[in-house]
Length: 299
Image (cartoon, rainbow, N blue to C red; front, side, top):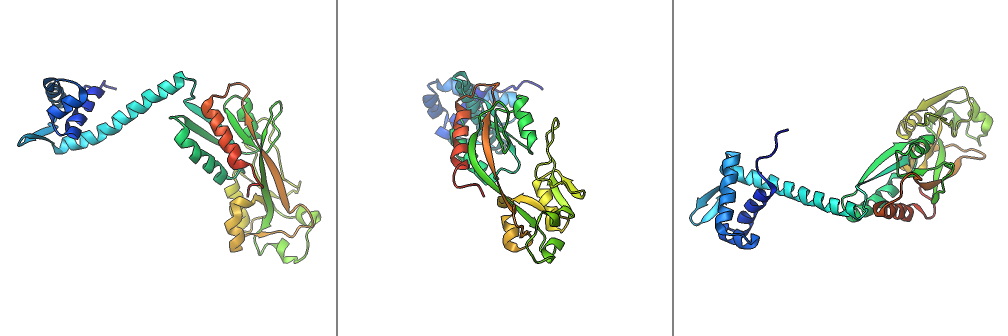
């Protein structure tokens, strides 16, 4: 890529001329001579090959091209300032990036609340968010690919901070054969039916969490796909209540009247990498996730 011919200082000078209403005023604001400011702008126009200003009476006015370029340059200078600020924060130990892996069953609304509150405090720190299922979260953390992890599993050799529970509800389409029995259901009733199971994204030791052992099952890659299958009558499943609240209210999904186990409450935990010391940005994020995650359960 060709090196830019115009410097940030030149763009800053042009902005000063426009914002302060002329060369003399810009020179005073920048603590430079008027001739230096005039030369800088003239040199810019020569380097770009495009007229940026025209003289209207005693006032310098932007040309159409100058107006477009000035608008873009404001973003350029803002980004350069943010870059320098980020470098300053990094020098003080502030992270440029925090890698967060989250189990797909964890309520997104709670995560959004934490991230929304984090952004004004981030000082340019970027969050790299990754979604996994079951042991996939554990693998990413243990492989050192994540700094923080939210999982419903107990991860060996790691201490997890509790984030409350997530309720899973056994559901099926209202016209499903299980609902047509019109009675309380037991384990034997489910055994012969098609169950929709979420595929564990882990590679080393994937788990069939929630599977009842029946021969007939759909194994899908996401909770959204599982909900679609069940909503269309292709089986039953335990799904997070917070993800199917609308379908339950509309009646397109209906809880199964099980004699036990129809509602499962799974605790979730926040884990920290043992490979990397948490910096100030990570610690702020941890506290916010705990703040919005703990309480009377997540639903």
